[in-house]
Image (cartoon, rainbow, N blue to C red; front, side):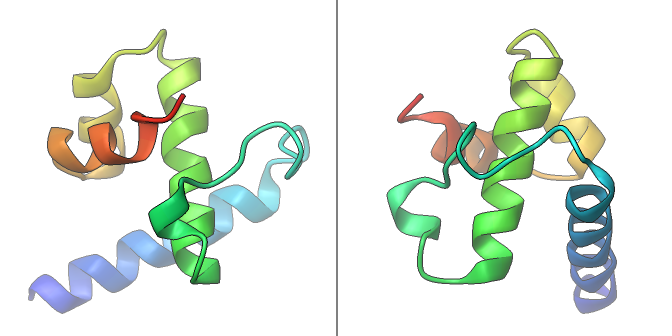
Length: 79
């Protein structure tokens, strides 16, 4: 069951990045730990974008994306 949720979340992340025309790679960059995998890069950028759109509310980002607050903090620590 956990793997299904993870796959659905990854598909959701890919879809939202592909449909977002305002987001370019030059605006937000993935953190150092996420720069190795394309899926990680996309999810990292999505976390950062959502964090900025939510007014830098970590709890709201975690709820919207189905992540833990710790994971959100890991992605935004270098911003």
